[in-house]
Image 1 (spheres, one colour):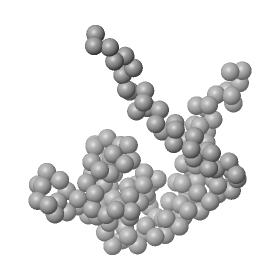
Image 2 (cartoon, helix red, strand yellow):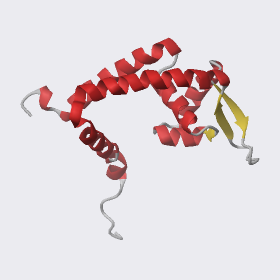
Image 3 (spheres, helix red, strand yellow):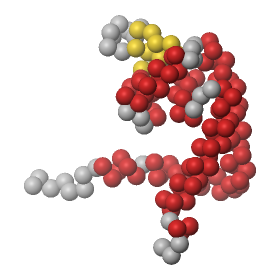
Image 4 (cartoon, rainbow, N blue to C red):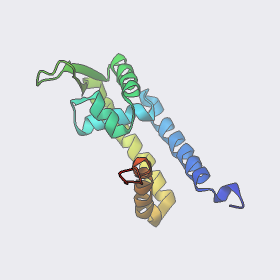
Length: 151
């Protein structure tokens, strides 16, 4: 690597910063952060998940996910309810009325961010999505043991 601009991690980091800035700006009028939006969005897709299910989907540990849900609950966007199947160890998280109302507008705002990125990337978008998906798999694969000898 002759220049920092040839470093893949640098380029990905800069791209992440730019998309994160656009996302923060788009979500600021709604009073949520991108990770809070992500939590609301997965509830929009399937309401009534546990914190553990949400954390697994967002690749966040339980303490981080609990903090996110706490802040969303304080803001009146979600509510915790006991598990309908009677498991007292689990609370289910549901969008509140305000959360559901804001999600409609937030989804449109984030669709705008995605459209802007798609416009910048043009025809490269499908290939880039595949490449990013592969990079997302790197960590789990790296954690797998490579030496399977009985040793």
